[in-house]
Length: 240
Image (cartoon, rainbow, N blue to C red; front, side):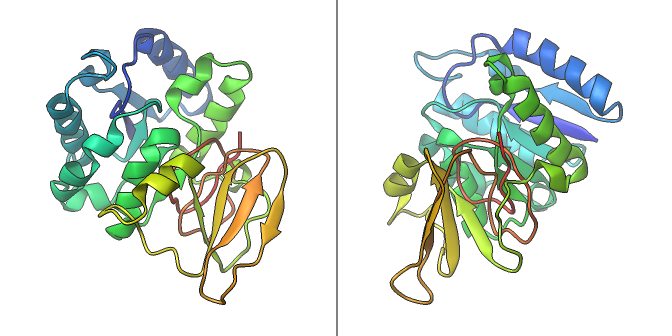
């Protein structure tokens, strides 16, 4: 299995350290998995990991590569909203077969992918989390979901037979009314918070808001993943 790491948002100055640590983790836990960092991860253009053109081109390159099985967004920050619509429009059939994982600013891309009917998008930890306190365990769970669709990686409490979506609340607010906004009717919306609570929506087809202690991996959830942080809709929700 080949997982491509791309950086559609903020610059990724410590990408070599992250690459080394993540590759070692994958070799130990999932020997059949290759982690391939796109060279674009090393670019810098002010705040961003390369220009808008650089970031869009890298994303399209990885998405349309039939040898790549999954796309893992490197980190959050800001910038994916500037390229999401044009990149998704350039994705070919090979992109639909992949799993997609990220959170934070990657929520713009995850939302657009979900809107376009991509089945395997998830909200969960990203490679750069490995350098944070406790981050290695979160990244290992994310890797288990990407490599095996491990149910142990999923956020607890996902209801079987219901659709779930997860977002950073700011990202969700910013994408409403745009060409990236997916149809979230009859979904449970999950977002990071300090406690857990479910509030029924005012109508049967309206979304419910779920505030979670951890960052879910989400999307049109039919399974129970648990993963990481922020993000857009996902097929499941991963825990940190």
